[in-house]
Length: 537
Image (cartoon, rainbow, N blue to C red; front, side, top):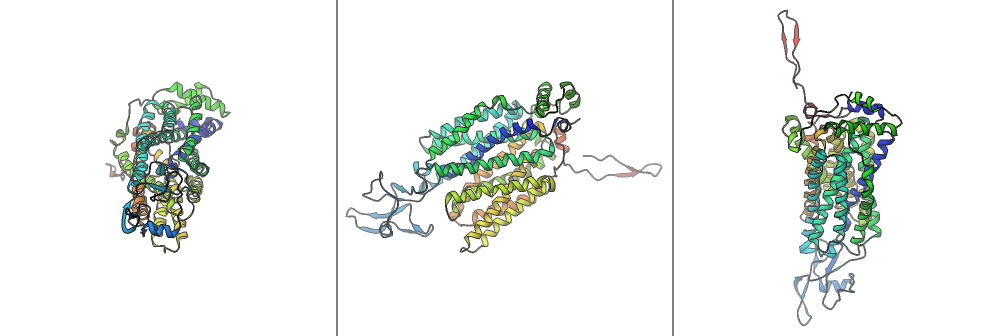
């Protein structure tokens, strides 16, 4: 009897599974909060040079237009007075047409009281520092995917998951006390790495504990929790306009999660692959009791038979690359994750380019993710993982490319198509999680998803720089993201569908999964009767 068949007898998604799943969803909410917090922690308000005679302690940003025209040159790129230069003033206070760069800055505090950008003065010539800080945050997320992904396959989901929670709390506190931008950047990398571990391990553990008919509930629930964290961030940022106060909001749940240890389940699938059969049976026995379908340990032992046991070899990410079929599938998945992540974060972090209020724009960007989750929930088991993934990447690519041809006086239409692209790439990014997890066997699943996540973070690393390219041509980010999404959709067409397939457990299962059989070879025996040779995989 397979593991999924055992689950069908004790409850595939009973009360036990729903309680544990809720715990994973709560931590996923915090990862959504932290992943998107850079939008508000490092928000960039308008600025200007401090004028001679002004006191930095009590100066205000607003100036009458006639004063601005006397002291600041006009900047055609931003359509306003320069934020980085002022006219040079000689000793007699007479004005000339030569300009000098700002020594000190005055910031517009009408929207944000204090951000890391204004606290550490990361504007004008230092604007690249903020972009690099965002990129390095994703470097931390990438490292977290590698470290925690491999560690959870080696030492177990539960221990690694809890260590990621502890690490998150430490990282969040370090971010709060950062005195300058270098330590802030390093501490954000730590926070990103641990959030990556929390999200990935929680997702995989939740996926492994339920039956195949409920996998879509797991993927949609985890990602919906992530979106709620995004929305919660926007609400907190609206009321907490100082970046250190906003960071406190990220610390509080980390303290509460320290009490998770007694309630976090180990993955019974993982225990079986490590020949820790008795522990796996204990967990399944507890699940059967809570689900109201109590089954004795002896019965569970008999049902399990030799399920997924016997493979105790220590495996790493490089192992599945030694298998031709898994290697080819992995290369396509790596590229698709790279594009999905880069496009998703590129659109999410660039809401300030939309006309209107920063908080309203961010809220729109977050809310459009909800129908994406609904779409995935109602179609993933009906139309298939592959169809949804490819279709959404195509829609995202086309929507973003359409924005290039919209007239400049119809910015509302640009917003509509950009949000259509955001909705589609959110659905695509969500479906690729379950699609990928079903491609890899249990013994290497976390490492496989971790490797894909590493490629995704590389996309996130590149995204801030792609957004920065809008200073050269305003449409370049959407052109790059749109074309890339279309290409990723085309490549994904070669991967096998995973709908209603049993999860592969061993490396051999993973290699055979989705492999196309060779055409049957035929020959005639001595009696001229047709004989079909065995199909080889």
